[in-house]
Image (cartoon, rainbow, N blue to C red; front, side):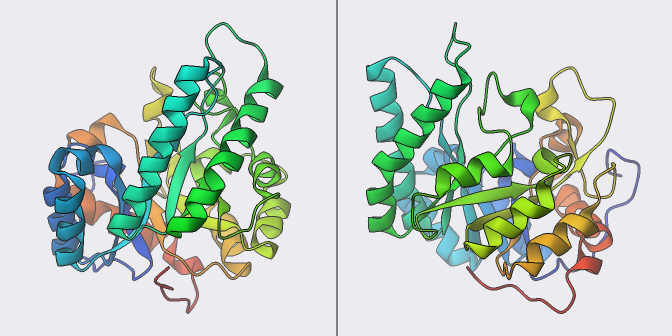
Length: 297
């Protein structure tokens, strides 16, 4: 049984559904790829740490042999350090992340931009540091053909993880750049509450900047560690129909990732979780996809 008390489904995952590796956090890269293939997925979103465990060359080979599309690579970012040496380390690490994304065939590197530097209250300055980092990384992103995908996070993470809290702010940061170089992530968990969401999704779509669409649910009460507050689609309060239809109406044709941070789900059996994700996606999201099929971004 799953943590929600429902039996896992054996339904074939929808063609646009991508299993983000964070949802099965404790699975190694080989185990994650195997779970996705065995469950019938066509796409997976990968994280850098499991890739590092096996080495980039091995990771690229394993991904190729799996036959899966890679919908994105997580994560880059953390640009807001004020110490010059720390900032240089961040920029260099993001260049490596772009190279890793190219090697495994990921079209986008998801960016969690970083919170306030220790002891700082300067949100404006921190966001300016993000803009400077994007400008420095853009030429390398263009050279490897990977989109820098700025992900706005819910405002409760502004102090420690992301000073970019709304899709509008992310679009403002992306605007100086070609959409193929800097785009945005629409993650339902982070943006469902925003009264400007539909307008900003339309703005993102008109500019061709939606690099990734991620779905999971919001449910209260939140746990003590709010990082682990995500749930299977359909288990909370998010209106997936409204958001999904807004995203797809822009012409977005990429994969749709389910990315969940939840300790009970992490502790569950990997194959059970993979099946439960497909079941939840089928119930909460698929009815709003119409006849659209995966675009194979």
